[in-house]
Image 1: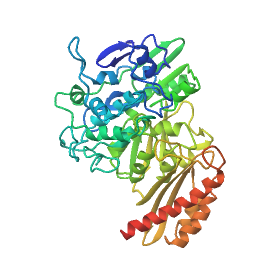
Image 2: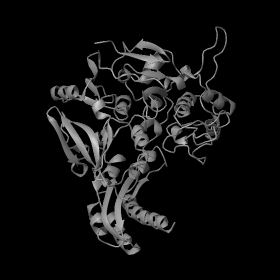
Image 3: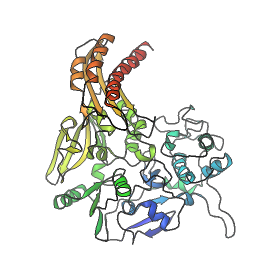
Length: 501
């Protein structure tokens, strides 16, 4: 098998002799690309962000910002990355390089002070700079003119979180700065224009992304494997059920960095075509378990409104650029943000092994704390959401920070209200039991009842008693129970406002 290789700033290099668990961050720094920094080693600060060429949503290739501290470098075998050093255009011998437009704006507007976080901001900003259609609905900013086309309405107007150039500040939600303050960084983001026609990274978007390659990389008795097909992967898991399975590595990367986990065999799923399909049929939507949340968000473009509410509240853009539904469900965490939403949507998981597939309702999938019905030799191939969708939906995440935080309580609602009567109610809860759960008693208290203040108040009292919340460092059990009831009252207020407007 061909040796594992990666293209960094236009130059191909061997991954060897790095051990399989070596992160992209450490790999780059060992090769002198020290702009990439380690701040948290958990994917929360963004100091390590780099650009990766990925299959595009609106163009053949998208430049996507990811956390280099989480990815094992072997996972990027055959792929292309650009670091903050690679954004500038090299000058002639003896001359300084020409700054990239986002670097220039950050310098002009005082967006850097100590500079530790700046390269990460630059890479996240560059990913948004190259997002197709960013300027289509804006005025082009101070540095350029708006382009043609567009994507999902992002950047459709200027507000507190979108610039006149269409720049979406959520692109920077995973980047932290402790000394500059965010206003000059925002000013720089809102000032960048459209990429010039001869911009090599803009031109790269028009070409096909790197094709998936099979990988079998071994060092020091540790092995990283990526097969060509799902069938080959499932056969491997039948032989080696103890293997660690990864897609975006947003959870496994933390285990490697913080808990020094060293798996004997890691099997990657992120580039398997069979797990990257998105199908919208008359009676269901099927989402491949290896699609990233950003890809799902942009490809669905609001067609599943409850998912559209979830995505901006799920971690940060940097994490969503790598995280998958398969990973979020596969870990079995009771505080994952996607399970409550998928429970409210009555989703099922498609489980595959070497002999075939089975479909399991998500409400029957979790069996205990971080436990499920999935066998070690099975994979979550896809998530299936039935249609038609409920018309009244909401996702309420209670956390200490507005964005990029772990929820204390998460509540998802999907209701059918016809002629003032609740015909159907589905409510998913996270953070109040050992597993994500459906609020079955509250659903029963709502169904068949008029959608009135009296019904809602009675059902809110029932909802407060759902689950088995506990005290921990994020919230007390009493607070969690109170938030459950308040969440239903909030939904009632929101729907009343929507009807009156």
